[in-house]
Image (cartoon, rainbow, N blue to C red; front, top):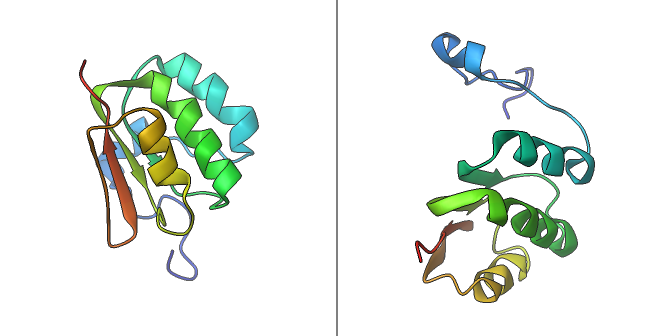
Length: 108
């Protein structure tokens, strides 16, 4: 994030009414948020990049991801969490490009 810019600075004004910044520990907030949302089309991981936390977030988000939905993970090559999770869920379409992991949830 550029120095001096607040979180959400890149969100255009016309989308701000539909955008909400939630700050806190993902282990406390993510399960409740995913429960409220029901299903999600895209889950983006860009928080704590430890193996344990990344794997936990992928496992937490995956059940809420609609078939064909995407998990996008920043710094997916920093550890083996992303490829191991892809193997765990038998992802047919997953790759890491320039350090960013992309997984499309199987439709069947």
